[in-house]
Length: 80
Image 1 (tube, rainbow, N blue to C red):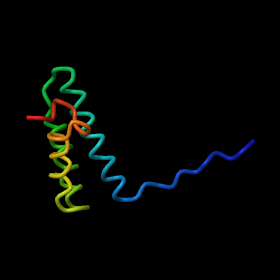
Image 2: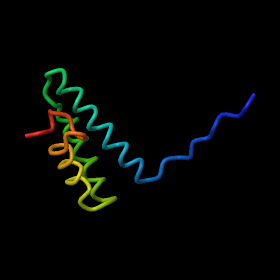
Image 3: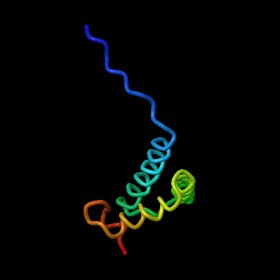
């Protein structure tokens, strides 16, 4: 029986991106169900955005811009 392929652990930056993606996904699910964002969800999204900027200055604004303006990237709910 072949050994399962080992996946290398995520880098610090990948963990930061993953955290933001999870927070954003939770917010999108809430909005998709026509429910308001909970304070904890807003805090998680803001904290994840701050961690993005700590890892790469300006990255949070760049991602937000892409979600709002690039039809291939963002869903309709993040556009103006």
